[in-house]
Length: 460
Image 1: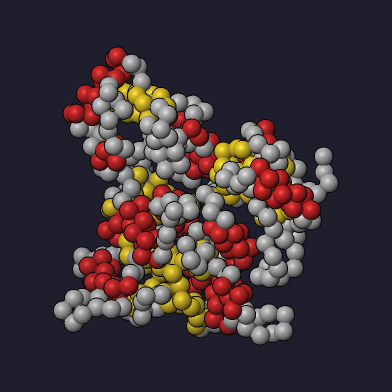
Image 2: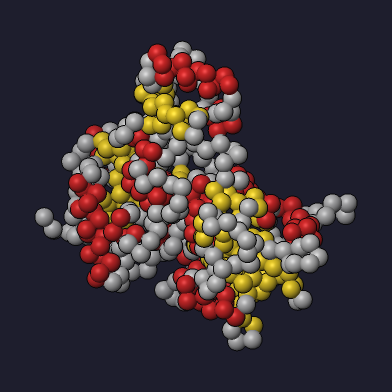
């Protein structure tokens, strides 16, 4: 609310610079000194700041959690800290300084950086363009598309995922070219086309990858992967779902995928070969728990078809496409969705991400003392993890405890696809009796610890 005038939040992203909104913010700033957000029923104050000769709204420090989870002004310093390491430029280190919304005309300018050399984007790209790897780019698209988050009222399939990725791409440009203009994400219409309508992939190859006749064009392909094949003993080819043409990788790109994306490659191998149970039979349950794999490819058109000099793979939940690096993560996501939780997968960036970032945050649950808290951290620590990593997660749990955030830590053993899933922190909707019962069951589960700072059973 601005000076007794109610303004829909969607207008802040589409019409922020309009004279009407700017005038309303100016009046509210001079009379009240603040604006009001009504997302949760009770008003919450917002700052009115002048930046680049334009008035903006900003959340007050330490009040981000008071806003509704879907509000533009919701802030969680844990998640904001992780995001601040994703893009090193144009992202203030203080999460309260970052604008709650972006104009549709404001793009973050990037330049694709291959793992072994700069990509073939324009050589004259300004130095203000930030180099970014495909690994980080696909993570940013997932974050900006809210594909790392879940609410019990949501539904999501690949077509919804495709829509959110396309919308997220509109926030970026690659060497001055709007990202959505050089991005192809296959949909159902890619396979089912009428004689009078061109195949979308063929059209993309013709308009984007063929270039201007003098220099070859490049594009980006993001797609779920059906299968991978290895040719000439080393060179890989990927067949995306909803497509009939393989994407061929160069030798160096194949080597990168083998070294860096071995987990996702293993998931693809299991998809093709089948997961086995204890008796050696293909298990439908184990196949259901297997992550799906998404590929991002920097593609060009060569003599033998489309090839890629740079690529990266991302393992995701097969149903809602939340990042899931293992079968344990898929089962955790299933348990959270079945339990009606609001939760988020936190993507950590940088070598010290394990020291700074919890893997998951679940919203509005009972803490170990029986009090309702706005969020708790969830962690999955495999029994075969390196001792250094286990210690880093212990240190992180202690740091989160200082911020009032408890940690639920699962140390799974045995076959990840079988056995009952341990109890999660009780939801805030639970009755006191139900919450106490679940807390007692958690304490009796040997592979789970739920506490402030402790991640080992019996530690003090």
